[in-house]
Image (cartoon, rainbow over all chains, first blue to last red; front, side, top):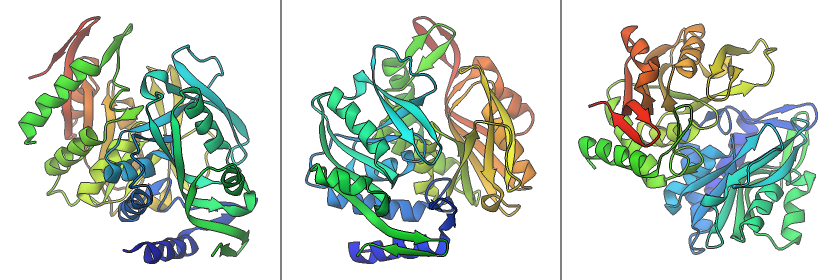
Length: 196
Length: 196
């Protein structure tokens, strides 16, 4: 599928299979982050890799658990390693990791995310990948890890951005390249409006 | 790489990059479950898919987080969806999920794992995939979910089995097809012996 067609197809899938719950929660667990549609994810991987093909990316980073699948499908096309930040139960972390705090508004809790210092260095050119972007907390945590390692952030690739929560536009205003395949500008109990 | 060569290569990678910690803990976080080596995982996906090519598998199942990557690389070759069981913080789960208890000896805790009933049905022929197999707790939890859904278990594909912890052989004795790409029969502070 060419890019335009694919973006249209993804939006159709969100409309068709997504379920809206109170509190502006959109569940796409039938194809994106519980059950994973192999063909769709392969298309996402292909599309994202085309967007960043010229960037000499050395590593794709995400956070466990729901970002891992997309990261792997992108890695297949860019032929780079994936590094997923782990969520720690405590904020007591060892000396050999970079760590950051991430607030999840959906799950109403704060996690400490960590990556082993050995796997993220100043020579890395990193593409961040995730399934959702809302307030941008997860991306900001990952960017902090990249900064601590003095690595280079190339950009962020997101499957579904909740545009109305502002995280994506805030990062763009700071000069971060954020590519979201579908941006939701508003959502009610029975409708979804995408950004053109 | 043909199968024999690949199995040999995987063992070499484990010897070269694996780190042994007290308590018979083997860390392979440089290529398998923190940082992910795209080329290696692609080979694993290819190899596992060949083993189960004639089984008409409809779904690949694993548990978050470290099984997701392997599951996705296998799914690419078998062209099936992936379903990853989620770990819940509480044992209070809703009516629309199948659930099971899984003890992690490594992390010294019990988790409740769940899958949405909608995504696992009696028509499914399921391949279980995971990065590690030790006492078999995770696989038994996943098999319980499959049984609850009256789905069919085709077999299990594992990257690294700790043979000396007995989980794999116990499942084999019960008639479950368990295919492990590398089986460790013993491990000391500075050596690893693989099963022939």
